[in-house]
Image (cartoon, rainbow, N blue to C red; front, side, top):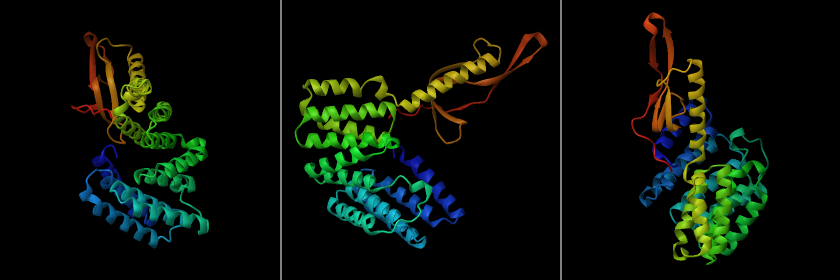
Length: 312
């Protein structure tokens, strides 16, 4: 959702793949994800666009005789979209319906791509909706339950829940607790980067502006605006990989001076590795030695964007 246009393009490809596979259940999942794009756009005029995608997703799920957990997930997705458009009452009704499905539905085999969804994850949706509905007490209780019951392999989600708990503390006029929770979320993000989690923390910091002079807020700023969190850790990994590639190529080429240079950060623009955006500059290639007059043949093999991607 950080890049809506690229997300839309990817989801269209996914929908076409689901059609090729004649997999209506997968098509329902893709259509539901498409609803998030207008929902997170901040444009209230796109509410019907999101709702149309949800209706389509439910119809595809009906054709596929979707398992109960899938129907509960669709309720959660619709609740999330309604929450973004300010309709928290409708969102809470949908979440209550999803809870009833979990309580009464018969367990059935789930597709591998939905094995993460559970009653705990549903409660995460509920906690955020209660927060947006200005019910800090129930929101805190729900979110703490989620935090206490997340599995070890759900580390990314912890930053989101901690961010929501920090937002609850702001609503309760407890800036010190809000900062403590936000710092815990940042600690998670350093280890397991998640753009949604960082967005939650930044929203909390914006809401703390009236307490800017507090030591707790200044400590939060020190951590929030450090290198480990200002630069997306995934970009640092790419930079490390590019540097290693540079060293390997240079060694393989017998170290040709001034030929192979890499500086800055490389970011994949697509799933294909041939397209990169660079913050800085890069010159990548292979070399073949030509014996005559010790001449070197230089061939560029990398495609580089003329404009660097923005760091988010």
